[in-house]
Image 1 (spheres, one colour):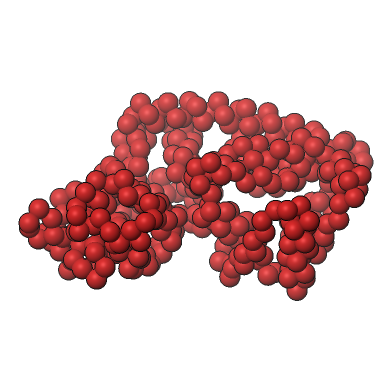
Image 2 (image 1 turned 90 degrees about the horizontal axis):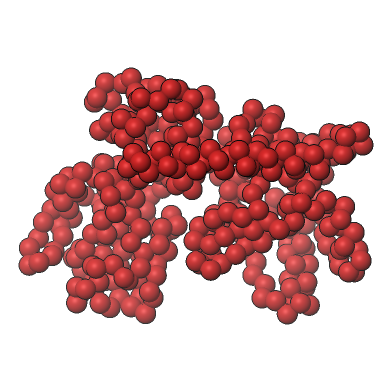
Length: 366
């Protein structure tokens, strides 16, 4: 995955190609960019773009393995501590986690970086050093080059910080289990009713909301911004719709409940879906399958197109034509989500099916 952030990136790609060829492995080069501007800097933007690209190709049995080691974990812990993070930030990187439909694994988190380099020398491996790793303008590089070496001289800090991250992971895991039980008991799913949050003390409210956001695969916003949004959502008049936008997504209050969405993008339309293709991944990462009951319609048995609402559409079903807007109003779909619901039609034809969300206001993955 090539961000193109420095002139040597093409040579690095060729090095990777040669190594893969020598091992008899398939090699694929992907350009990542241009990077979106993010409040947390170019490092975070690059990381976000990398994982978005990985999620595109990961199937249910796919696993991405990375070489993060104990030194990387120590840096992550320190960065989180300097930001004032709680247990979820201080746990650092986890050995296993869901990534899209597949998994991300980090088997070397307990291995010192010197041990990794030593083994590479023993095996006669060659590698390239990313020149951006020498730039102290990046926070992680500053810690790696200026701070951690001095801490390690006196305290063997990397190993201790990695242990602290593991302990924080245990604390965060216990808290997550407790919060998950509370959400399940309240019946919260794709929509979080404010009635679930109102009886709670402020710290518990924030923890429950942050857990709900993480359960949807997004990183929560900062504590202060989230606390202010919660205050507005709980105190605003019934017709007000406070919202909070951050790099990962958007929170809205609507009809006395909270709704969570990924960053707004204009859906591409139409998207062809060949007859021999069982699954279709939309540009925003959602996956549709032909197992949906809509495909029982003979006119949708072959090649179809996925389109999105633009206004004025009518749906042909059961020998009748109905206004799409009316159907969405009947189902209580929030206005801003209506343009994201996939519609099926024969190529160039009339809309025959709406892939409705699974629950009130829910996002659509068929």
